[in-house]
Length: 404
Image (tube, rainbow, N blue to C red):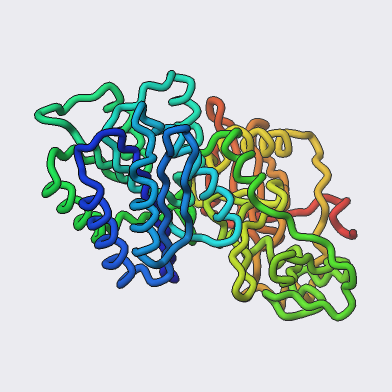
């Protein structure tokens, strides 16, 4: 797996003077200069709110002096009446959501704050709803709370701890400049990278609302204006070698103009999605844009597992399909010769549904196309459960599948 860059966002939510400007600038410059030695492709941003509530947001810089100068120029004009904690995170989250369309990367938000936020529970609920979406890109939140005297408890402690824990970040309470400097140095060495939405992640649970969010971020492949001589980037052929369907015209990624057969890209998505079965990064050269195929094309299972990748949304769609008396399934035009040629070098394609003579409430599906593995499917409570068949099971296509 290639090493991804880490983009760092500093958010100064400081209304008091518990830390001096020069101490903050010195610590952040140290962090950037040291981090640049290992985070070669990463960039740095700074967010400060002015007294009128206007955000100063300097983004995507490599030079520590640019970030330091931004703090210097805006320090005396910063907001001092109240904390804008939630507002700042909303601002940064929105920017991250826009940038992840183009490139996969780690995001780390370092919040330096000295004042509890007192916004309503509605704001907090909205914040955590957004965190549930943004954290899987992945995004980590590290919080440094500057406390005064022996104060250790604040009205927003629960919220801060939940944010840090939910994003695999950290939270620390400090009282003086020495502790602040030490904490920044520790963050330089932070290696909290986990497998979330990057290269074969663990199965995740996602709500319908969050799925809609991710689906909106991703682009669809487009039909080419001229398909003459167009070759698939994955198989390097004009006609797909798997389905041999001359009507499987390669679709185009608008950002890099790479083209992909339907069969080829479906197989790629099964193995290289971003954690949601139908959303993936373009495999084209020098491209990383977020793409999607129809969610109905993918049913992601492994062994015996509860399907939860798109939670009830996907499960409901699957259940509707497998419980119909006779679903209409588009056949794959695979010849006897093609079957013999591809037994050892097969590529999964579009899911195809078949029926066993098992009990009425259990169905059998083949995941990954004609050569895919067989699974029994049953409903347990309100979930769909897939169990891989361990014994050889014959597959007899319906009569209407014998020809296209």
